[in-house]
Length: 566
Image (cartoon, rainbow, N blue to C red; front, top):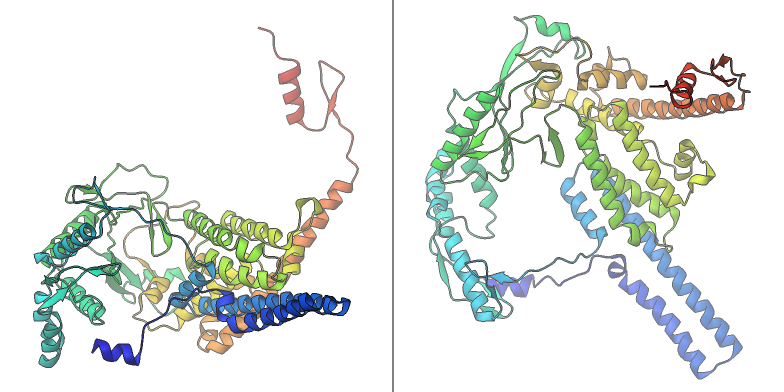
């Protein structure tokens, strides 16, 4: 089988993912043409041959620059399409490709005690063989239980026999350079590289979740799909609302379990840990975090959630690319996105933004496709305050001015920078993504969790009076008003995707134009105030003949120039 695969498919050759690698043929022709003129010039050093060689060098440089620009533009378009289509797998793969090759530090292999470094080949093979033999033969990691429970999910007997045949009698060897270790049996775990591993893991996880006791604490949600999403009074009707329980949110091998109180969260963590141990799995306490969001303006005692005497309590942690904090705001998440986007910009500085061979249009395309897409990851779910939007706008302006080589001494306005780069503002982009996401949620089936969250609220608890935290619904209603979309009939508009997309596009464009007009008007008013003559001071100092415009200046003058004597 291995020999047939080698003859049919062959081996994948190592390839450097870069612009010159994909255009090797075109670049070789340009260099060969320049080399031929160079050889002619060396054999016949005439003025005509010198001009011909000089023109060939210019054509070669121009052609290579065009090839490089075309490659980067094509990559920028592909990455932008992946970001628009939410194809994160291809987006991150393409982003990793354009970042270029990276150098990873390699440390020496340690012995079992962790103090001695192994250098000879035989000892390295022996160490790796011992490591994988212990790892893959863990009795708690056996697939027998999984194979036995597959018939419970409707799998036929032939499929069960096939899976058992793939895993029974497994033998492995460790390779180092050109040497192989001796064979060792693998009695636990799934077959390495088996395509059935994700499916088997999903079945195993489903079986574990079925063993969770029904009395495990949950979060109660109440919702109502009629009456309008912004009419919160409709949820007070007890007979017309529907209640549902939110127990766990599974994503691949990650599991988020909510709780109403700290005691419920501790009970839930203990229950899940017990079930996992029953199935021969262990909870990674280093990656397991517990976060409690207390009501604002209230003092609460410190409560810790533990698993196997390991404290899980934190104030913030990263989960699926977002930062979750004990304060229900997006401030830390925005700061993290700015930090990640700045890192992406720095990794592309030498290759793109400081590359004189690329045109300005290509640099702007790469900036929008990679840096802005990284900056605004999951922005459609953010609930932002004005300070958060200003932080994002400052980052965009700072990077655009670096790309366009606009110094601060030129006093170029932010609107002029956006017009010169042909880029929309961050606020308009966020509004566009938010409305598109709201329309997508509106078209979901009523049993989907995002739609339940949009049309419902927590069954227990009350919002504080005064100035409570901003909700996503409040921001969505404000966004609809800013884009000239009637909040009372937006539900009917979202039913047709093309109509909603057209309404979002027109509304976002109108908002951006109005925002630019307001910025220009604000700047004109500020300049008019600066040009107006300042009225003379009228507040005199009783201890000296000096006059002041404001009482603040007068009090500061008396405090510093005429302090009371002690």
